[in-house]
Length: 73
Image (tube, rainbow, N blue to C red; front, side, top):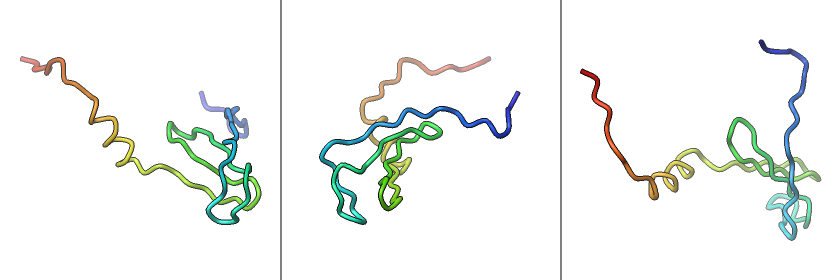
């Protein structure tokens, strides 16, 4: 059941020493996850960065190993 109007709590962390590429201010970058995608947002100017899914999948696939293949009969 989906509750409309109810905001889910999102764990947000600040990245110490990081500067915003848009406004160049330091210690204003906040890291959080939205739909299992990490996002970084500047709390001063609102600039948002996300990691493209291809980059996430490429780094995941590099270390992944296939144990077996399921073949239903």
